[in-house]
Length: 195
Image (cartoon, rainbow, N blue to C red; front, side):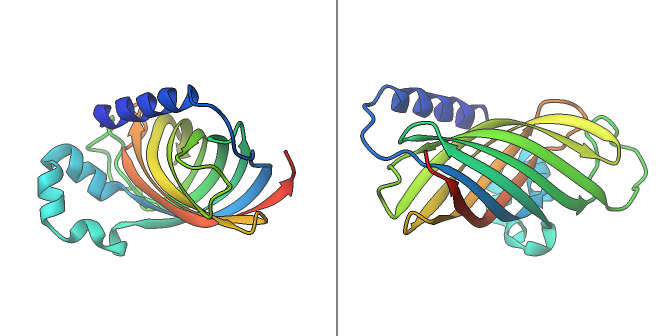
């Protein structure tokens, strides 16, 4: 995981030194359907990547808990966007600092994070892959915590009116009240103001 964060930061800093030549995204408001996978993330940490990828359980939707998120995105320049997300899900997981606590059942989970999206192409193109890195906070069953979301995604430009966005992230825990998880989202964002 540390290698992924290192390469994401390196890619962000290298891209920042390149000349800017495309158009800058305006203000966008979006709605995303999200999936949280705590089981696969725990297996990655405890058993390793080859064990997880060697099996088929990591692909099952039954391991993931659905949720919804509202996003705000605004272009900083033609290759970098700022993205803020407020999300909600209903899930159950074991806190890393309380591994023997009895199961309390599914509870409401709230999250908020801010990310920098580094687009590999500008918004002039129909399809733009991107890397993301940010900071976030969550609340589950009265426990507050912090995490670092890092991942990659794909943005599809729909006639400069809206964007379809698919994203995958690993949520690395910063505090003991957060469990690492894989996060997937897809949704649409529409322009609400020009840059």
